[in-house]
Length: 195
Image (cartoon, rainbow, N blue to C red):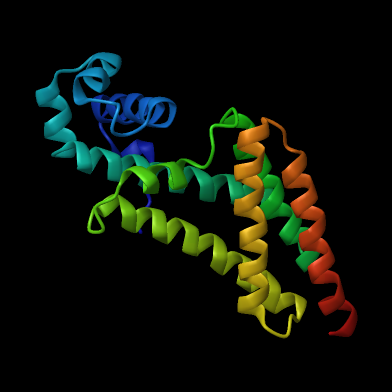
């Protein structure tokens, strides 16, 4: 997956992408038409299509930009965290930041996957790569922790994260994420003690 830093996109393209990203996340992808995006961005539909080719192209770029923003956030939360427990906490802390800053509207990638039902939609590939990137990060942590089956541990942590975000979204409360965080740490500690 390629990065999509804003300094490589023309200003009109940035405005379109920013407007689309807000509208897609707040209202849903299907409910958001190109007219609304163009109006919010202050451009014509012709300009939108010249930058992104189609609504599907814009959706895909929105997801790429969101993934880039996530990886930037995660990197910030992983700074100076060296032990597996600290790194695992960094992932949970980053998830909490996103959950709260997104006003408990759920995971933007899961929300998009629900709407993008066409298996070959290019946005689905971005969603899958994003989630796989998180799972790989967790597996790396599990390997460092000395877990007997790092892939299994990563999957358990991933399910705790994803399930907690759904529960947080329903309750508008971060407590489920805190509980999942504690559960994840309990799973890593035995591996560290026997490793």
